[in-house]
Image 1 (cartoon, helix red, strand yellow):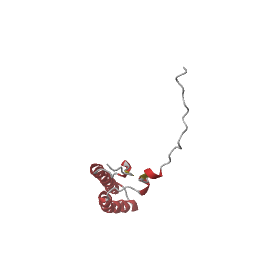
Image 2 (cartoon, rainbow, N blue to C red):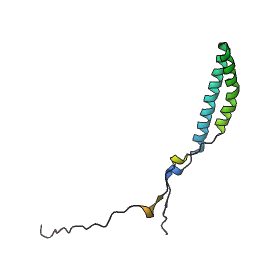
Image 3 (tube, helix red, strand yellow):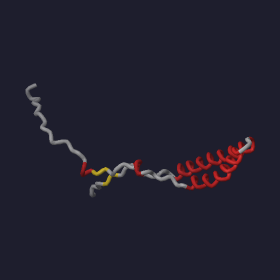
Image 4 (cartoon, one colour):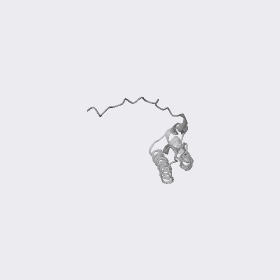
Length: 104
């Protein structure tokens, strides 16, 4: 059997589909919670802040959907460089001392 020099790091594995889905659902629900808060606050305040909060309540669904549809990807700093067995440092050959156990 031929020896393989390629060593795979577990850090190269992608995020599981369930974890990715859970993260995207969480981001969507947080955005929708902020939208609901903006809408309710817009009904309670007066002046220019009312229009800002209504505008945020109108724009946030688009932002929430865009963020929820964004698939989690690993960034380049999360991935370790490949480990190459041929380039690893090795200890120099040692000179073991002879132990004479016959005289003991």
